[in-house]
Amino acid sequence: MKVAVTGGTGFVGSNVVDALLQRGDEVWIISRSKGKKAIERSGLHRITWSELASSPNKLEGLNAIINLAGESINQRWTKAAKERILQSRLDAASQIEHFVTFLKTKPQVVVNASGISIYGMSLTETFDEHSPWNVSDFLSSVVEKWEAAADRIAVSRLVKLRVGLVLGKNGGAFPLMALPYRLFGGGRVGSGKQWMPWLHIEDITRLILFCLDNKEIEGAVNACAPESVTNDSFGRALSQAMSRPHWFPVPAFLLKTVLGELSLLLLEGQRAVPRKALEHGFTFRYPTIEIAMKELVGKNKN
Image (cartoon, helix red, strand yellow):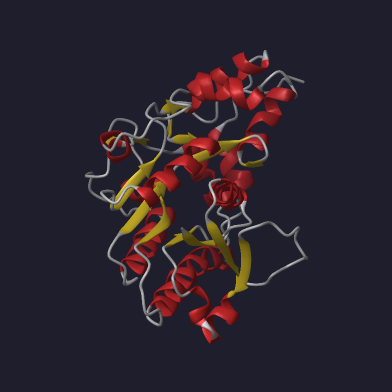
């Protein structure tokens, strides 16, 4: 399979690229620049957006596109940052839409990253792919526009992967989330009752490939573990895996003061379930937070 990946050098993207190469696919990473000279790997190619704009035929014969491009949301949400977060996602989808129109043979599928925040925030409701949207804050408004941009890509099958919190040892938010516990200062954030839809890095990588290969999957797909947890339960599982106390709560007002609007990521959430993935037979290697924590923490508890 010939697969193009945007965001292929990021936390999730690099894992997806590795998995594709390991199974023998031909991978093209699309990025703004080729960056530093990388170690050459069989089956791996790199192309910039500008090169693609002038020579879209380089990706003729493409079977699939995985779009993971977008500015990190893990930064203070100033007006400029919000614009970068939104525009980076819209630009990537728009550029994909543009170059696909020039291909004689269209890709069979596009897997486009999206966000679980499209459902809005709730302490009581449970959301699956059939749940209505609730566009009530910055992130949900970004996802609404992001999915609308993806819908304009002219392919027969589009998967909109609504991603929760991705946990991995070597990237993403988990190393920072674990740091207070390593320093014996971990505890719940805010009330601790807010839901945290999460997914292990290995499972999201496998789920993306599963969506590529399973022709019956299209539309919205919740990328989260079958068992959502509250912030307090998450912290307790982490403290148990690390043999550290879970006792030092972080007040909501302090987070709001330090992080501003970004604090919503930690103080609010939603309980989501991966109904479509389960119905199509996907199996999670890390279905519970306890199993995930054992792998993430491992034997190195210090």
